Length: 355
Image 1 (cartoon, rainbow, N blue to C red):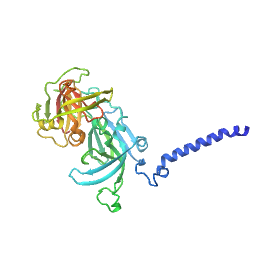
Image 2 (image 1 turned 120 degrees about the horizontal axis):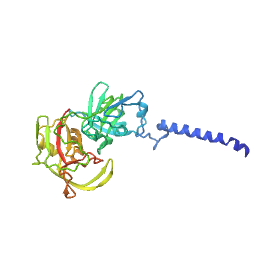
Image 3 (image 1 turned 90 degrees about the vertical axis):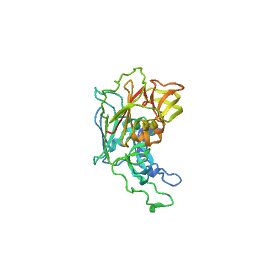
Image 4 (image 1 turned 45 degrees about the vertical axis):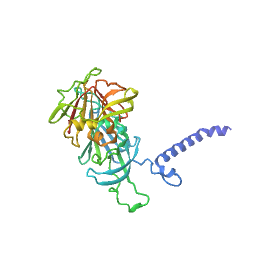
């Protein structure tokens, strides 16, 4: 018994060391230890390649630099895409391993200049830049607040989906090789025009526009808008609702990013797509829309998320909540979002811009 007491600490140390080795082995060699009915599952975390570097800058508290090692610490995602180019050509079906942009951006501290006209993040445009200098853009809201936020990933591994009956003879997948660097993948987009290979930089910025005639930001201000002013580069006019499709959503679950659950409500009003088509004579595919409330609150939406994603059909100009007039008369009701923070109460101005 005395001899056992003497060796007990060494025995416990040995067990601990064995445990650490096993945990390390299991985490780094999943294909060797996971087997389901004798087959290797496809949904296994793929290792992130070495040599990757991603810089995040712009309206941030500091410049962030993420390397392969730091990116590997983020929770990964596993998504499928059926890819069609902006010319309508089928480019194949793929599975991607990557990191949701949400996971990265939630850890980035936003810092705007002291003289910014609006201090919130909802008017920010996120610009992705490739090593060769190509650019792709998304709104901050669609990456962080929308119902599609897990469809936006920076992928580091691509695998063509091979039909079981075709095998290696299948030729419909345009891309056969794996990725080199990070690829911006937006699985909820209709085409791949915003996809971008070899992303090395993310820049958070705000569009430049003349705000002299727009409402000043006053938090907590109680106000209403009797009309909506629609402004494009060469024209400004009061909005019309003639011919705009009416819309009702009866089960809008409202959850705020900052204050949580707000209720389940019925919202009545007008379909936003129909409203914009009726009030802007020409809407290019690279258009952006800035929605501004009478209290100065503002939010940016991309053309893609309004007109080409399924969730865009749930965007409304709301006029009534549970049968009562909406706060501020008109509102942007982002009923397809996960969070309600992109709603704009007392909507008074809509700007269309392309830069």
